[in-house]
Length: 359
Image (cartoon, rainbow, N blue to C red):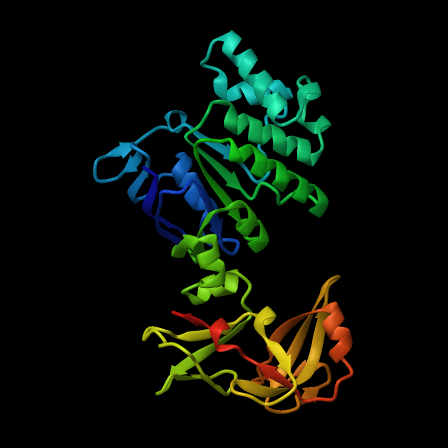
């Protein structure tokens, strides 16, 4: 039982080579634009044919190059919510929803369409055309159409990308409620790390056409194993690493040595520290270095501090000298107010328990 995808596809200037398997049904694809997420969805749906490999959901083989199996799109029972919704402009809302039910009898189509309209709270819009709807309403129609024929898997390709932030939050809440009662598999594609965490129980990390890491959302976000996963989940402090003796490591880019409380895997190439895990302390202690403030980036609730370790940053106008690497520290606005006038250098502490050791 579950979903297995192990495929390769060569395209002009791009090679898709992805492999993942999950027994869980709430799966997220996280990666930068152009990393292969949407291409993989198209292969699962049958809109694109891989060069080799297999795609299996539960006991149903969608594609197997060795066995010569390539099930037609119409027989795969995949619901697809496209990034731009792809509604039929000349069809009413009920016509769009019923499109996937065209081979069923009239009574069933009417009843099922009514159920879908109620599910997405569009009962009064059955006769409306897509251009008469808001972006959020169009998204609900696309979701209802994808669910109407009871698919084995639903594919959601960045369904909130065209919505403003408030509507995005509302639709995310509604999607979670709908998917909580959906019995099939779902794949949610995004490059938004917060969306990926809230919607998906398990996450696959994509980079340059390849799947580089897979795991539960907590595993991928809090204990990533690869440089790519750390970057995509918001770790901006990354350095090449040299492993020393006696549980000591050197962060080459930061010119720091740290004591750690566990053995470091031999294949470790990078050390990472999330900005929110750094602390300013009042006294020098192990794994603590002096730092000078070079700049800030403010948001409504937090402030990112750009810090230079070891020495006061040398400036050329407003540009940092090439080769000087800063680290980033995230603090609350209240903490920023209490430290901004404090004499520098500040003492920045790296808690060894928060280090990420990455391949």
